[in-house]
Length: 267
Image (cartoon, rainbow, N blue to C red; front, side, top):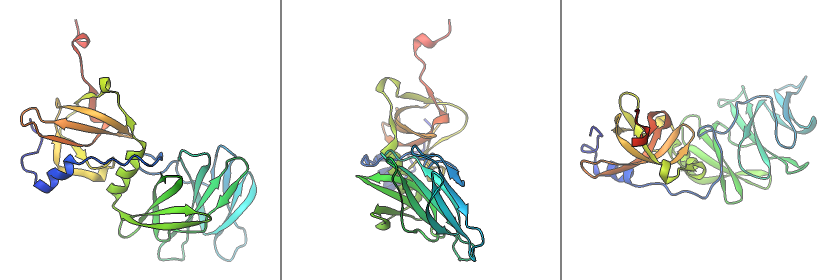
């Protein structure tokens, strides 16, 4: 078996044996980020949301419209990103570009519906970029990554304002937190998978390419158990048949194939 377990430090081994149990949140992202590409018009279940540059303004600003009627105005040239959050309402982020500032992004959250309701938050998240969104109980949480530190900050909608939470996450922590709330369980009868393709298949701490574990991999022919899937990744468990050591983490789905049974063998 070519899996690299023997040379790991005790601290790294400990990280691999601990599985996140964070099943209190609900969100859909692609694969860890929120939904569609930014644009000036997005559909919702309750009607379209649009952004239009204000003509003749001294500084760049944008009108936000819901069903063609003005909802509010934001500073900057705004694009829209629809969040795929499971809720009675739909949510849209207005990402405003502010060319005059040393950091260029500022966000406004729109809640569309249910019914004819539509509300806007106060602006928030200067100097950050959109990373994701999730649910914390009955509250919506927006994840923004700082442009310079890459740390992920979380904001919760409270009335008409976005309040920043005290927790500051790495990108891998934020991706794992979101995935653990959205992953799809795999039935036991379909869980056995074999590594396919060529070369090493690397484990990741979260379903994000940059979260690769540099010392842990499996090779073609190794057998794993898939527990959950999320986006392009599978949450797997592995047991080395020679040493008995175990590991868990995320592996790209494209490297996994169903186990063949005797009935699948060619005649």
